[in-house]
Image 1: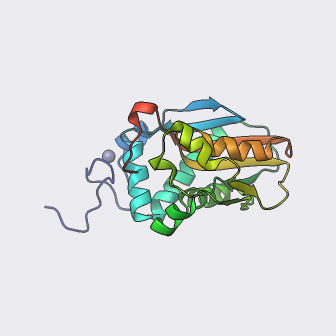
Image 2: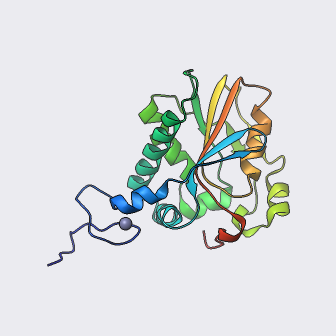
Length: 206
Ligand SMILES: [Zn+2]
């Protein structure tokens, strides 16, 4: 017998225990780490494909705070497992462009970074303002780079050891722009994203 109160996995819809968001099977399949070496090292928890892409879409469309907490938790554990040197880190995030913020009413990377920094006990600051005019998702690789070039600005002096959080790393344009602004001004710069999107799994509907 099913009732409307029975919780289901947000990804595969199987019944799950109360208090859970996704089933153990989906949870295990979210993790598929990789590393991008652009302006600095950016670590990706998983790939932007099923089931992680479904979870991220659910989060973005419904601004579900419980998913932000889950993603923040996942990234915090990931950070600990990567065994970075023990330093006084400050957490910040890649700014969303204005239209995306207006459409969704929230900045996904900010929300994930908030949970991430709370769990690890690191301060969270906003380092950037963004003047990006077009949503990145509508642009190809070259246009994405042009779109972010010189449009992200530092709004305060950066701390020495910084972790930058983003939700999805696609071309790396925003992350690299942020990296270029910081790399000469800080000692340690680490990028962490929930997912890395690959060219052919890139989903325009996000
Ligand atoms: Zn599931």
